[in-house]
Image (cartoon, rainbow, N blue to C red; front, side, top):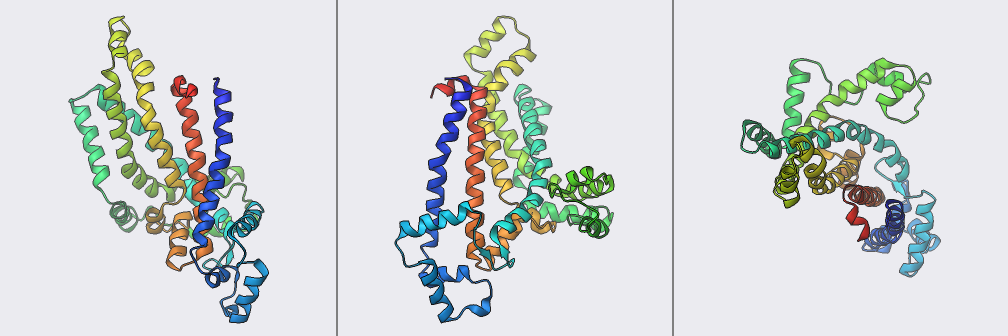
Length: 345
């Protein structure tokens, strides 16, 4: 089976998975009684009267059989209607589209550093096992695993902002924020670093990067630890495989053996971990966004859960499920690229 055929097959398999996810999410809503579900359609709390609630139940058929309500709900979802967020006083989809770029911008710059630097250090640690390089790398991994992210974030704020006054814990400086919200600035992607370039306002991009430094540092230090450990373990196992010993016996250089043979096979567990890591980061960095005052997806979802904003929580759940499904698809494609034998499975 060719790579193209394999990719098409994997994409087709997404359809039943998405249907299953939506059915599960909708089933969660059925755990609430009909009156609680009716409140999801009320935008103004003052309208929560018995008469209005009963009218909503009759209008939307909330007493209909499960499958009838499910297909009606799916029709609304396909039209982009995920409900009304009481917390934000906006449609849930608008909240997701507004908050996601904040989270995505942090992940855009931190994820490549975490993955590629983690792989590099993990490979180096395995190749130079029990040397000073290995000891230092393992120590970095242990420190990253042990540090609480909120403590590290507060420490960075105390040093870089309180002591030095360099990086204010917010997304943009106040004067830059005013300019970005003015008619003179066009929002192409809602990513400040990218939109600043597209608008020819490099000072906006510079300010946005400056405020991203601390969140990126926290994520890299905390998240890179697991990538290093998994890569090192997989690389050590690969280096002891018979085909590696044979490659060395044939006179191949150490660089060729490591880069062409050992590392490629050792990356499969790392690819899995990287896919899950990026998906989990894209669905919200609750602690990082909260501490650094970044109005992203994670902080919004946490606030919605605290206020029992059911529509927002369910919309966020749907979004998260889709992100993880797509992440698994990309991981499967990378599997097939790294190990062609997987295409025959």
